Length: 481
Image (tube, rainbow, N blue to C red; front, side):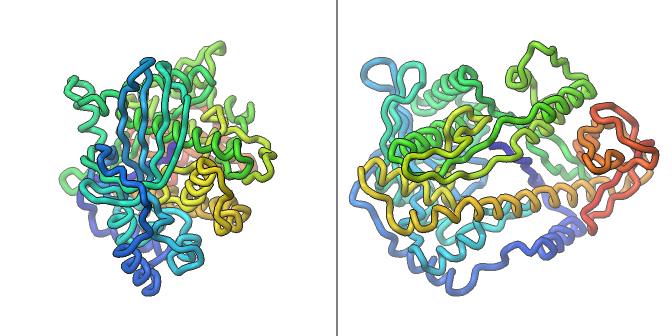
């Protein structure tokens, strides 16, 4: 599911670096890995628990942002010999081959829960010796993996699923721009061309079942002549195709777990009517035409994230994802709700175990389900505690994301105090409607706004004045002009 991405495109000035260092301290994020954890990581990196099956002849490739080294997934797609379908092989890093239950690595992973991303770096879930080394599906490196095989029919529907442990070796590390270029120029070899074909088929099925994938723009910090600007970068179609393979696998994993009666699902209730009504007012303020007969999903799919007003609206659409959580079930009794509203189906997280704790457990549950055996005791023993752990980790990640945005926006605007900007009020507090959030038209800033003259006009455009921008305090504040 989408998050607000933020990264620096160039070297950042000292005040911003300093503010980010201070932020790490204030948020009490995990520091360096303890010596015992690093020692265990170094030892298991040299001697992991390897599977018997050898699938290194499968020419897998990875698709990730440029420079990524913590590679959770590698894939290969091939046409089925009969029926016009396709076989998707999807290798997921086998973190359990390195992390022993109850060991120092395991305990530290439960303390960290997720990888945390800052504009100038990350705080990993696992030590780099694993997350960017032995456990990562780096090109040319033989590594243990959970190897999924998902057979699709000619319409992209799943007809058969299995997942087993195997040794794999990726052949190539591709980034989104390279993938998109090969697809657009018609130079992509069959496995990559099939990624686009399958991605489009899965997007059509998503529309048919009522699901929606938000194409949320990335906020990018751009350094120009010693100063900063903040811009939106629209995702490429290749990123959507890649995401569909992950969604396909998460849905297949949910099917395996529900069939065997034990598992953990990623769930999201349907958005309340009031939240959609707020979005309608925001759309009107941003001059986005939303006829009443057009559904939210159809509107979102019609928007061009390269346009600033559409980018602003798509960012606001993420409020409908609030309330997502993890739900454990046993004995075949599914939770309520059991469906993820944005996926419009049962779904789970299972494709990012290097960066997210729960995925190691869902992977084990799926391997056990396909093998027809009970899951390992260490998995079932931890299951009931995982939703709370993941909630805590997600809250910390959301706080880091929000505070980082505040720091960067304050650094961007610190020399523009007193200036006025065209803006839209995209949110107001329920308990104090004189306090809310304003989305600037330019630059791509979302900041706090406070009115001394009563409630703010939710969903309306107005002129705002910048009255505070202090990177050291992580705060940008506007007032109606």
